[in-house]
Image (cartoon, rainbow, N blue to C red):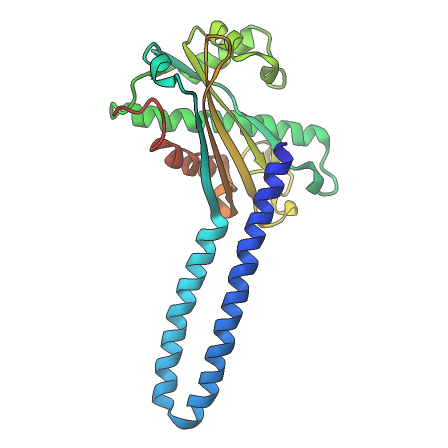
Length: 265
């Protein structure tokens, strides 16, 4: 399912790229015809046309970047969330699950290297999300407090639960273990490793995966009661946004912030 979402994101980006390139080539052809015609008649008009063409070119390139950089978010909110969240006082942020597209693994990269990168990125995203929420919380923007991730990770470690086994833990059990009312979690699916984390530490060249990173990120909120999903935010992006966990998280949280359910009215 996750790989299908990533595949659909890639196809959507390619569709927009092809569409804009076709339109751009048509514009170029039309302008070239006029350039040839006016170049014979009037160099002054030729100069003006070239300036006009460059302005149009900038508009096309800007539109192309906007089209392939990100896709509109998809949001789910439980019907009773407004009632349930009024009882929430403290929320924990779990390490994110990370999946790197193994189909594009370059030669020499082992499964262990990939696993280390996914784990490192999962904790990096958790840290960045917490830092962003902490900054916004200092402005009194939220109705809840967020548990310090050092305490969160320490409690998980003390319980003997590894990063790989964390996804097997129900959200109800996670809330009970951490002593919180709800947990924020999520998943990141990326077509290549990010520039921070284990990939660089182990000497893997990130560029071996290609120059463009396509990323699908999901942020979820689960209640302590019966692991009920209360809120889900899906975000897709490509290009430099997914080049590092910090870039991704900043873009993700800026997008999330306007719809974040704990935001004060």
